[in-house]
Length: 176
Ligand SMILES: [Mg+2]
Image (cartoon, rainbow, N blue to C red; front, side):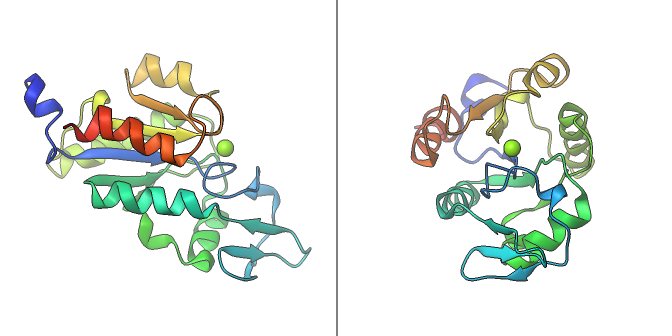
């Protein structure tokens, strides 16, 4: 793959999204026991009254990425069934093509797994075509070592908000 192809607008790229504190406000959905019920637009609640609210700008961002060619995937260290129920009840399941959500901190291995799945379907992605959004950077040493030089967006920190995230993707991924 040459440099032009790498930045080509039509080349596939991958958006991996953390969930806790990144897509919704709660920092540990695995501590919120299902069942969940809708509690207004973008909100769910369990029987203990714990509310989980999505960040509307995060949803807008994911939709924007999809309309700009991204393959989308969750990358969350949580009970998978809790997350699936939350996505379902929030009505945002269709925002994601894949889920690499497991109760495991090994996010590097989850990314490698997805790359393998995509390769088997005929899509080979270099690390430079992978964007990972997370409110914490604790997985990045492993990811850099085992996946490579992906584009990490440390949301609410180095990257102040999703508008800034879009700007970076416009420059680094989508190209001119
Ligand atoms: Mg998080």
